[in-house]
Image (cartoon, rainbow, N blue to C red):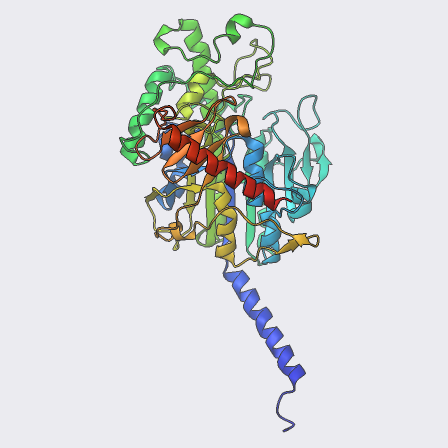
Length: 522
């Protein structure tokens, strides 16, 4: 053998170096990813989906990206977050947070905002154990009250509890939506110096109750809602058709009462509380009632407006850093609008820090235009979300897609885009197979294979199961309802009685698929 011919060990070293070089180049070419989630925001509550609320930053992302007409969440805060980050409808201690997999693929992983999981999600998936940087709070908390107060739930920085004096905030006055963005930008400033792609999970608390907003944002909407919920809902419906969000097949459903039997009211103020869950024509209200109820929606709009302003801060940072064109941005919400009455009292109007008011059912119904019902329900009003995807040079601008998707599809989508590998095992046991399928073909303007089925609705009490054009759904642990989602996407006509065999057939398929999912957990 010639002394100039490389040995096997030399070849191995060269191949290894080549592999590492290619892998590094792949990571550098991968897009940054920002996944933004709103909270308790109805399908029609942002501008590009029909709202009068000012959301110019989300609207611009939609204009230059793709909007899904039909995209499902899990109809409630904690199951939506659990399914989103694990890629599973439900699981056990063998689930893997998507951030872990992206980290292995070379991403810097960042989480700023709300954290709230179902009990089946192991602590190994919590932000403090997964993300390189995390600023979190559990479930809901007030907007103005610092975290070491009587009512505020604590904030955590990388798992360490923060007091109010330890918060690093941009603005002089504490407002939680701003603070979540402050930390996100701090994390991004650090991540950009690492010269690696980053994954930012940005789950805002907005617009979950209580109805608390900054005075300047509230003033923007003074007088907007004095015409009342009936006219606002009709106007949104017409705008949604004009924009192309929906078509004429989407009938405007009759206004819904809050019929949820599992969300009771606190005691006291019985005369007022008796009206909260019920729809009443706006013209039937007294002038005092109109003034009081108008303020609810005014403050709610201000909360969403502030969230959009903060999304704009993130977009501006991307542009200043020259990263905007190489960033995949996704936006969705965790469930439909929420009318559930957690009010402590009626002595304080919506808006300031001492308020603990919630939307009345009629305003929440406006948010879910043109659908029925609310958060927790597997009906479209509870389980359908906006889904906006913006990815310059990869997604053709100005698209609506009719193709059906589910947040369970986001995890496999990111795997395909980044080349990240989902582990075969965890803790010496087989990992659970992901339940969704990549949305990349849809992003690329292609037709993807129809999902075998979709699941939503909070627990079995409000379960939804959709297969193709057919959907079964329960309310209050009742009997299955059946809907033809092609001809009746607003779920006006329950076909369960007229098509009992079809109802039984879809229900049997649901139980079969549910058993398969449960079998995977064994």
